[in-house]
Image (cartoon, rainbow, N blue to C red):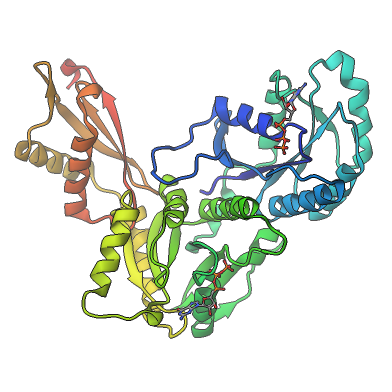
Length: 442
Ligand SMILES: Nc1nc2c(ncn2[C@@H]2O[C@H](COP(=O)(O)OP(=O)(O)OP(=O)(O)O)[C@@H](O)[C@H]2O)c(=O)[nH]1
Ligand SMILES: Nc1nc2c(ncn2[C@@H]2O[C@H](COP(=O)(O)OP(=O)(O)OP(=O)(O)O)[C@@H](O)[C@H]2O)c(=O)[nH]1
């Protein structure tokens, strides 16, 4: 279900960005083309030997003095401990072992998460190996020599990374409680929503033992059904620079969204919807998660009969890439409409896992094609042979055509709309793959 998260931690200048780019650039597909989504390489989807994971770079800007370096590294390590399944701790063979490395190693060791010690800049294994052994002193296991710049040792490193992933999701499958991530800018009311939901519903203590991450999960029972809320609120803002804070909140959002079935994208009604909201919502959209846009603090604004429509218009414009998302206007302060969230969550999950029979899909497609002729180019017309649904979460379809080039984005969108007219699929994106098939095979 959810992909494992792997975090890179290390001192400035040891090669974190270089390693990140090597892992990301060659072996990944970042889902792009969502307007507003950050171009910063803070996170990336990586796959290695059929295993997929989300890679995050916890490193930020370069601090000047060594005591700041240490405190920053502690912050990075803490973020990694809080969010990652596997941590790559990267050091530099040229600089050798330094005090900050040892302190961070202590911290990581106590966290009881799998840590891989990568010793970077080993551009020549023969020459530098004796220096690599020094890193055994950190007491966090065997050092793995790599050279990010020359791409040496990368395969071994990735083998080690995936060896720590749980064997195909057995454990997770047992837990079928809906997982709901609450995301949004600071101060929009994420914690207030969870607290209000907690206050009005029965709470039970998390029964999954042993993982740090569950500490931020809240289990809520509503109408006899359990829901797990994953909160991204409460980033410690003290002493943080703006860029750093933003990086951390993106990491928190990505890792929470990764684990969720449905994402509540919280917007502050008083502030209105902003580009930053578009960035955050884009993370959930890219990952094909169910989405509900929650406009909070609805009690705090002046309203008339047009207010809701005006809000919707603005939201649809700024978040134009997710027209399928439902919008709810709530107040964590008064509790207005909050109980309805659960029905909405149930509906979105149903839609995320909805499967449509192939026969029905093909009827819809045939009818759609009859109503609006497919595009043509240079005398050749697009022919659509066959459509079938191949997976769920999000619902994913494959369309077989005579020529991929002829399948315009707008025609795919048209078919999507026809499918949505028939089945709704509210709250979830739909994915389409276009495949070519020779005419005679039909
Ligand atoms: N010789 C050698 N140099 C490397 C290697 N990997 C990275 N470097 C160099 O080390 C320097 C720092 O690399 P970055 O990837 O920017 O390091 P970083 O840890 O992301 O640094 P910060 O952004 O300051 O945290 C650059 O000059 C890289 O070219 C390597 O494998 N061998
Ligand atoms: N009027 C009004 N105020 C609200 C509502 N929900 C939250 N607030 C206020 O908004 C402020 C921020 O609420 P939080 O729940 O801490 O917001 P958050 O999104 O969790 O913030 P971070 O922890 O910074 O991410 C607090 O002062 C709340 O009292 C609401 O529905 N109406």
